[in-house]
Length: 259
Image (tube, rainbow, N blue to C red):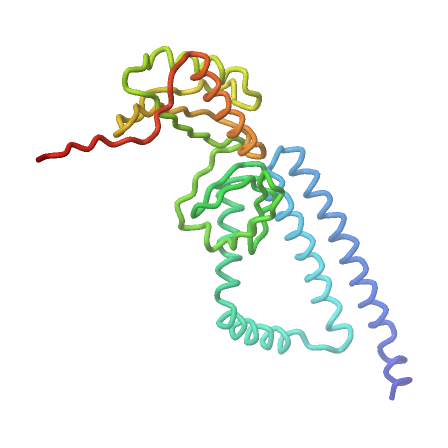
């Protein structure tokens, strides 16, 4: 039976193998061509990889559909079985499919791209990779933060691109010269490496507290150096107030005794 099968179907088997090899070869070449074309058009890398992978998978799938009938395998029942299995699998993995749907939405709408700084549900970091199922972030500590895409689409998302806002606050005594304090702080912060020079630093009175006048400082820093710059900025504020002879008060409360 084996000899008879090989005699009758040898050319079909040869044609099926050739179809598969050509499909893999053409799919790889087409994938590279699509990737190069997207790079030439300055298309975002995540979208470029998605188009390239889709083209390769489509060509290989088409070659498989050509090869199967040559091996005596009917494609129509096979497709029907795959459809039934796909329906059952879809119901079983709804969460995974929702991640893939959200990933397609992120890729096509370009809510953010690789290199942007995003903040989602209190977690922030630099976008390293965007996959169909999840988005990979990284931070100053080189941690890898994996967020399923279904938790991104439909949520409030902050995209500050390459920088992150740095917000600081310091209290000074009520009889202080606040203008002199703010000028001293601004002069010191101008020498802190990492604070963005393209966007001016914002300094002003934030509130009048129980024991001090709070001065707020807002500036933009690189996300990958966020905590390092924050520490340096706090030290610069402390040094500026010390040089200007402006005191940072302790928390205090006045108590009146009634007889």
